[in-house]
Image (cartoon, rainbow, N blue to C red; front, side, top):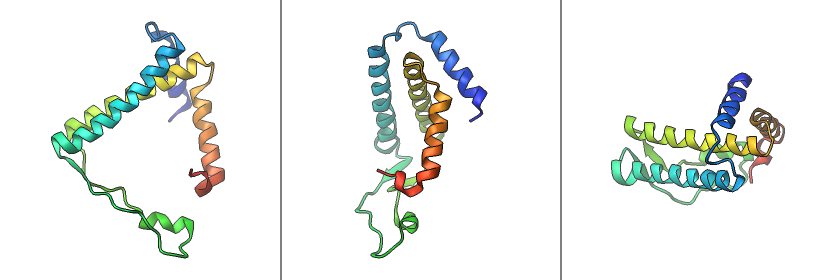
Length: 131
C-alpha cells in the first residue's frame, strides 16, 4: 500500500471520529468488527454455501524443514467466495481497518509506521515470527 494512501486514510478516519472518539468506543467497535468478519465468513459456508470447510489435523512429515511445512498445510477451505459474500466480507474487513486506523489515531500512532515495522519484523524473523 502506498504510504500516502495509508496517511490519507488515517487522516480521513480521524476527521470522521465523532461518536467513537473515546478509546473505549473504538476498542469495542474494533472487537465487534472482528466478530462481524467471522460471522460473514461463517455465513458464506452455512447460508450461501460458496465456501465449505473440511478441517483435520495438520501435520508435517518428521524431519521436514520448517520452510517446507507450508507444502503440507491446508487452509481447510474449498470453493471460492461468490460476488455477494466477497462484497460483504470486503466491507467488514474495511470496517475493521477503519477502527484499526481510529485506534492508531487515538493512541498517536502512525498506521503506516505500524505496517512498516511489522513488515520489517516479518522480513527479518521469517518463519520464526510465527507464534
